[in-house]
Structures are given as structure tokens and as C-alpha cells.
Length: 171
Image (cartoon, rainbow, N blue to C red; front, side):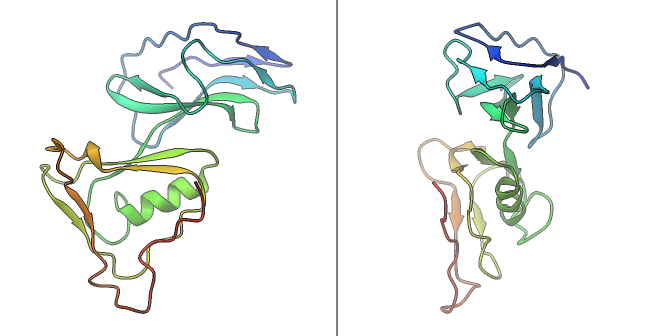
């Protein structure tokens, strides 16, 4: 698997412990790592030092967020971003697929962009994108070439006037 996992039963007390990540592999986008698997029903008490719930953390340059309520609600996990790498309306690497994947994963997720060689990436969905039903960060600043001017554009020009482009049903 390329990473270690601690399996425990019972309460997990972190109380400001330091998380040290030492990894030589390049994780795939959207990958989730369970670093503490609590097979009991007890909760995780406390957090790693300087890593509150949802905090960003990097593994070999790939951004992740940490959760202390992952898996069945009491596991410590690192969740990687879903990467949009095509302007296609659907399928792997599309914004539509990234939203569906993020909705299917409980907890806050991140959607990043890496379309083509960088520069402007205009998304023109053919119909409404899925409603966002779970907390997600859609980070257009990750598109290569970003330097303060937005490069990711969401255009409703192909949808028509009778449809919402995207609905935000979660924070």
C-alpha cells in the first residue's frame, strides 16, 4: 500500500501528538489514507498538533485534508483532492465526475484543476452539474499558470435558460 496504518480498539487519544509523514510514493488524486483505523466504537479524543479537522497537509506535493471522523466515524484519515484534468462534460477527470465523487465521500473534500498545459480552462456543461450535497472546496487557483487572475471559467452557454448551472446544497 505504500503507507503504514495503526489499527486500534477503543478510545484514541491524540492530545497534541505530532504527525510525521515520511513517504516516497506519489499518491493518486482522490486517494484516501486511513492512518488510524479504530475498529471499536470509541471516539478520537484531541487532534494532532497544528492539524485541526479539515486542515491541509501535503504528501510529496499532493494536497490532502485530515479528518478525525473518517471511515465509520472514528478513524483518522487523509483525503486527497479530486482533480479536474479535462474540459469534457462527463467522465474521468471532468468537473461533473469530481462533484459526484466528492458528494459520495462524506466530509469536506477538495476539487483541484490541472487542465491541459495550463492557462484558461473553460467548462461548458451540456446540462446542469450535479447539486453539491456535501462540503467541498472548488479551488480554481490550482490550475497551472494561475497568478492572481482566474483561469477556470464555468460557462452556462450550452445549458440554456431553463436549468440551473450548479446548485449548492451544502456548505
